[in-house]
Length: 336
Image (cartoon, rainbow, N blue to C red):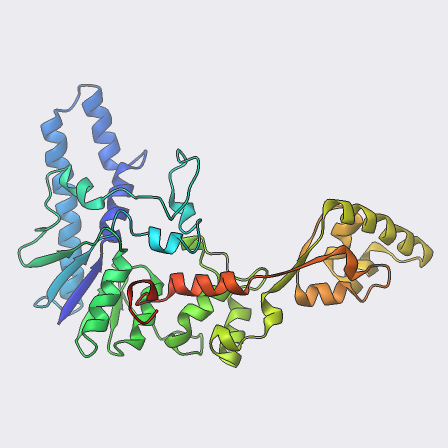
């Protein structure tokens, strides 16, 4: 029996305590004003974090894994960089506002283990018999995925709030998951195999990791596509296409639409109903971005021409997103 804990648990607890109204921040303000001894601060901080450990131990026991081996996986300081080489804005939404130029391929995060050490806790010995794992070049998800892949028949429960790890059911169908509050069932209503989880999320996008997915698609349509076609390789090329126009073209089309509307006595409501919201945007002289189906609808308007638009494809980018999401990661395996 094994318990695998995503070290993000400690990161979130530390962040909460150091928030403007958090315990650590309040106590440190007292230290800075001379109303609390620094030694007293560290004593209280350690006590608070030991309380979090007690909470985690309680949840592990409640899940029936009190006698299991416990493994804590921490993010490597350079863990984003391999994925950042495919997508420079990977997890850009988690970067402090003080960072002016962000490139995930070069960015190093703070070492959460060092933050634990700063209040007198040893991340390698949080509890007797607990094991810690760290690789500077990998994220905690990668360490968890590698452990699961190496133990395909083991009784394992993963403590995490990251749904990306659900795809590891493909490596070990007996996996259990706990979100630190309750046990969760990864078998949801998507209706497709977890072998295609990364395909689905690459299409749908993942706001938590700043992955946008296919333009104007969304989770529901992504689900339909994966159920119908399976992997990205089988999905029609049209899904990845989108169309744009320049400002100059938009201004030209604005005049053409107004003339056409006047000559044919067409109301704005009719324009929008027949050719979509994009035609109203163009009428105002603004640039548009449309998926292929909306573009095809717009092109049924005889006042407009394809010559004013540029066609783009996101296919290669979406395939890169899948590589970023996939666990175990092909970035760290020989069969990439």
